[in-house]
Amino acid sequence: MPNRFDGLTVRDVLKLKKGSVRTAPLPPGSPAWEAILDLTWEEVCRAADAGADGFRTIRKLLSDKRFDR
Image (cartoon, rainbow, N blue to C red):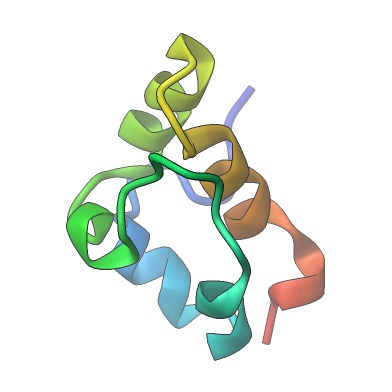
C-alpha cells in the first residue's frame, strides 16, 4: 500500500512537520536526526521492520498526524 511519504527523504518529511517532532525523546541507541536526514522513507521503514534501534519510534513520530503543520 503506498504511503504519502514514498520517495521522500527524512529531510523532506521533516519540512512537512512541526519542529517539535525533533524534540521528542528517542530510545537509547537511536541514530541522531542529523544522521538519518538523507535516508528515504522506504529505508526508514525497512530499518523499522528489521528492528533496528530507534527506527520504529522514528517512523511512528514521522507518520504521526499530530506533528503535521
